[in-house]
Length: 233
Image (tube, helix red, strand yellow):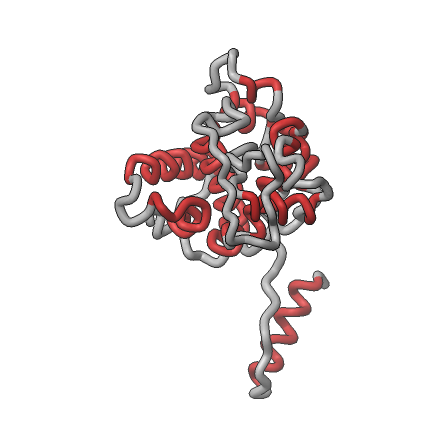
């Protein structure tokens, strides 16, 4: 008998006996590499102009290589939850990078928050958006670097020079800034927008929100899952 069936039998017995139990969520059967096929990934990056720097930088192989460090991505909750998370990630990446056209933010700036004394900015370095989710601010580069294994404060350009680090930085942000938890707990896609760029919400930048939602619903359709409620923020 499968473990999940035995678990259900045990739970039924305990409930019948009046014993309080905590249920363990069953693991999703979704395989991220099977969902993010060549056709799916290429369908996104194929929208970018051939002259785009990202065309020779981002790849499905780099995405899957980085994914191996974050096994909870796309495998948490129900199969629908997992597919929604994948759709959400690529919706935000598509919006942030112009279908994987841009590696670096076009409007560059220092993005140095001197109040974050744990992550002091290095002289001459800028912490503008880089990578699939456009990692921004010194404190994000510093913390991501510690987690991944590079000096994010002294070498923030690594996120734009190494596609593996670039995707790992995106996953780091996703998993550590309430994006993963928002989409897998049923809060809806709108909560992921708020976690990534809250200033767009509540009328702050309605066209940007609409753009993210449009990509999300499109990718949900491609993956055969309903987008769910609370898509806007």
